[in-house]
Amino acid sequence: MKKINFLFLLIILPSCISNIDSFTNCSFPKHSPFPGGIINLEIFNLTFPKPNKDQLLCQESLNSWRIIQPIPLSYNKNNLKLYIDEENFKEFKIINKVYRVSKIQINQQKFIHPSKKDNERATIELALMNKAFTSYSNKRFFSDLSMQWPVEGIISSEFGVRRFINGNQRNPHLGTDIFADIGTKIVAPLEGKVILVGNFFYRGNVIFIDHGNGLISSYSHLSEILVKKGDFITKNELIGKVGKSGRVTGPHLHWQVTLKGIHIDPEIFLRKKNL
Image (cartoon, rainbow, N blue to C red; front, side, top):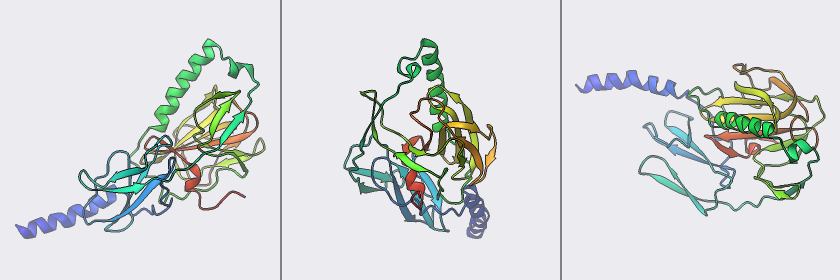
């Protein structure tokens, strides 16, 4: 009987490993324990870990794993418990990161006082975006999580900025704005599948890409969309061009990243600073 069980394990083990697309390098992005960042924990285990639904699991070797857990921008506690399974956890100290205040002026009347029709349109579009940001696919399109800049430009508004529009406080900035001339090429920072494209009231021309395992990115205010829903995109592939569609003060790319439905700072996925 012991021999039979051993043979069964030999047969089933490769199958289990292939189901999680081993091996994936998730040592980057680095451990960033602040609101809008991530917990990146390496564990060593001969058995398959059982992280919760809010975590990304990567196998880096036969017995080396990483659990990546996003930290919401709204998280306001000093510590965070990351559960490795139902019983075991590790506690991390959260860094208090202060985000700056930004005050902008919008002069386009249709965005200051939107019509009933525009409000209804924006509500429908918000639901579509929320569905895209929280979508999940078992397929993992990436071999590592290192991203490249989606466009050549200058950061005009970073993630987490506390925003005031026409003197009224709004939700924090949940993406990175990169200033560039209209028509500047936008490329995919990571491979994935296009899950949503369209022209939205506030966002203008938008693209959403599913990178697999709960990692989603979006690109807003484009002048041109050069992909369609269902397209499979490779890293560095041209997907659109910078514009100023939607509610903007000038041409730029608004780039957002969510992991397991949590908005996190896109810059933590970049190995190099923008030039």
